[in-house]
Structures are given as structure tokens and as C-alpha cells.
Length: 226
Image (cartoon, rainbow, N blue to C red; front, side, top):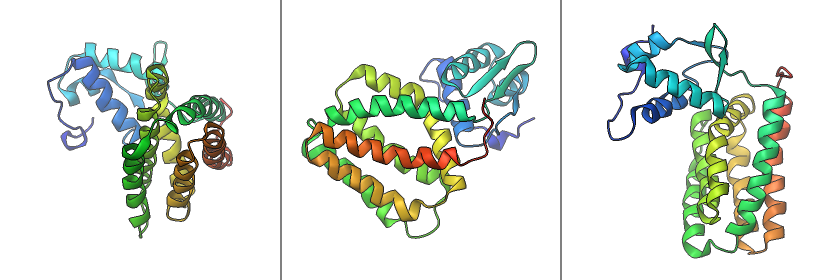
């Protein structure tokens, strides 16, 4: 049974199923549940003080997103990172982010780059060992800006559908290769400068180089094939 101090309180403004989904997603991506851990509906419902209906709805949604595996007659388990997962999410992310940067680089103007520069300043100011969660937060905050300015609602929705999985992957990458202090600022600054050229091809070349590094590191982990 989970202790009460592990589970955040639920606000009441939105549909309960969505709220439960958000809480469980955050706990999975934040490593408060471990890969392969059995998520028991009864325990989750008791801990979150909801019925089992919203729990069941949330687990089904999280399975669609790739965070949870539902096994017949056994229940829900936190997904385990595999080589196939990494390859599929990387190639999908590469495809949509190439489109996103090619559009964003001609649409961002001053405000968009100011937002990027604010994130870059946070990255640059990190002068001590950074925990994986904070490294991932800054990384995704930077890329969220690209999607916000690409002016393509469907691309943004695809990004939202895989963002949680990217979070898990980046956390594994930063936990196993804690080099954010060395490459976090410089790599994102290089991508920002490529976008500032206003040239879609240069932006695409920049994102290809940028996300390849994380993928190559993840491939070096001892992950199961499937």
C-alpha cells in the first residue's frame, strides 16, 4: 500500500478520469513507480480516494500512451523500456520535430526566441550536479516552445501523445549518462542558433543532430529487445 504522502492531492476542476490519468502519468515519468511494477486498481483507488472506475479509465489511457501494459487476468504493469520502444519513439519524434522546426523557424520571431533564451539561461546557470528530473524538465521546456510556435495543431497533438514516453527515455538517458552540465546548454544553444537562421533545411539539420545524441546514448543501455 502506498503511503498518503506519496500521492498528491487531486484538484476538482476537470473530469476525474483525466485528473487521475495526469497524476499516474506524472508518478510514472517521475520514477515514483518502477518499470515492471504491478499497479493494483484497489490500492490506487484507495490512495487517490476515488472509485475504481476512474482508475481503470486512466490505466487504459496510459496503455495507449505506452506507459502501462495491461495483461489479461493479471492487471496493469508499468512498461519496461525496450530497444523497440526507443527506436520507434525516436523515429516518430524525429519525423514530427523535423516538421515542427521547419515551420517554427519562420514563425517564432522575437518572442519565441526570448522564451528559448530564458530556458537556455536556466540551463547555463546550472553549476552543480543536476538530478535527472530537472534536466528532463528543462530539455522538454525548450522543445515545447518549438511545438508551440510551429502553428500545426496535429503535430502538437502527436507531440503530446508521445511526450510522456520521451520523458521516460530522457530520464533514463540522463540517469545513465549524467553529462547535462557538459552538453545541455551547448547542444540546445546550437539548435536555437540553427532555428534563428530562418532556414527550414538548416533547422531540420539542427534537430537531426540534436536528437541523435540522446538516441545513441539510449542504444548503449542494456535494454531488452521487446
